[in-house]
Amino acid sequence: MSHVTTHVLDAALGRPASGVAVSLESEGGSPLGCAVTGADGRAGELGPDALPVGRYRLVFDTAAYFAATTTPTFYPRVTIDFDLADASAHYHVPLLLSPFGYSTYRGS
Image (cartoon, rainbow, N blue to C red):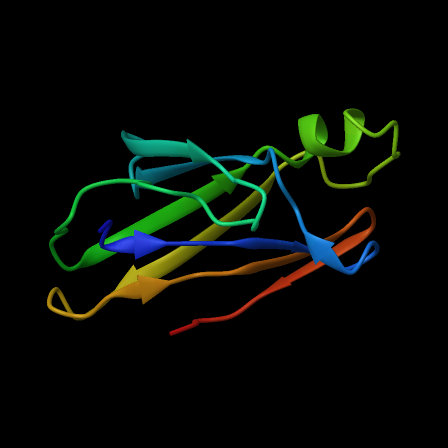
């Protein structure tokens, strides 16, 4: 399993957001992995099984997701920067999305 996982929920529709491309990057922007959310809104194998302590980011292509349903959006991309402080812990970073807002949290 990927050290970092995510899922996307479409708050406006009240269901998982399928078909959202997401990438995991190092703080410097080097790609570490990518996936597309499935029917349950979860990104499968997103990146390495183990990562060292450090800063990372998840980048979600929200423009393509909303364009697929001809929904206008204010945020064409959502970038979440986070600190991976415990190399032995799993990090789950969900995204709650709507066309004109989003929120995130450290999940379990």
